[in-house]
Length: 134
Image 1 (cartoon, rainbow, N blue to C red):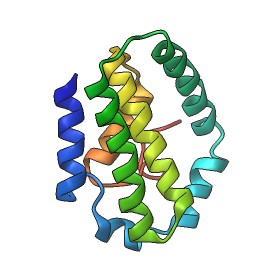
Image 2: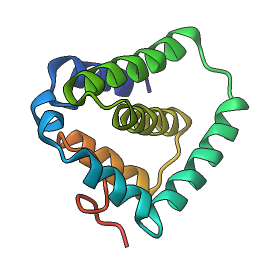
Image 3: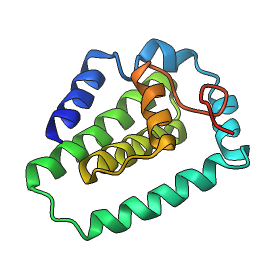
Image 4: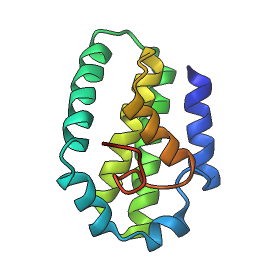
């Protein structure tokens, strides 16, 4: 579980997970609108968020795990915000990574989460144009 968190932190720090060059050229308005206006993306994301947050609140996690999660959120937010001058996009990225990491720690598996993670792992922001979402 912490190996996954370490892998994410390393990917952020090396620029392979959130490449600044990609985010600097991303059409932020298009990407955010694609997510916000997609008929199922927001519903799927929100349902998973509620489910994972409920499970997370009932779980006891060690402080080092909580610290790594906080660092992932903070560093990803700052990096994307700096690359794009867009705090809204940075919040989406930070929230996505929080959702993905908590799900991983809790052992939650879902095709939607896998799609999000695969997009980030390939260095791209996940939005319906980049994902296999129906």
